[in-house]
Length: 110
Image (cartoon, rainbow, N blue to C red; front, side):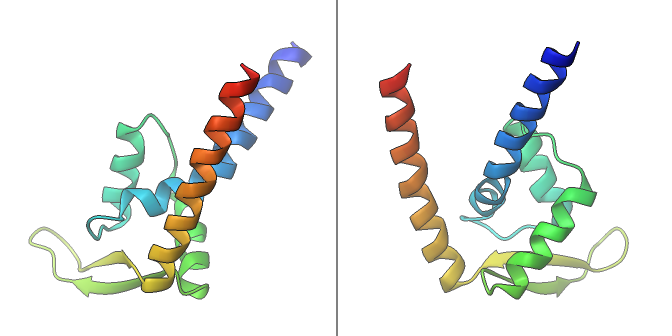
């Protein structure tokens, strides 16, 4: 049982390490609010809960990678829509390069 827990822990750590990149990817072409971002991640089989997403979004706002705009909703309260800033787009481009390099490196090991 310990071995399974250890593997699950390692898998969770790998996903956690990629989460920031995944969030930026999910809104690179179009702004989105938290529920949209969560849905995009779910479609990619990356199950994330709001309690994990919001701290990450707030960190990206503080770092200047994201900006937001309040928009009225037809059903319910206004929604905070997130979009990449210039710095966010540049960071995403760097992360994409890093990701491609890592995939290439890992494929050499497999």
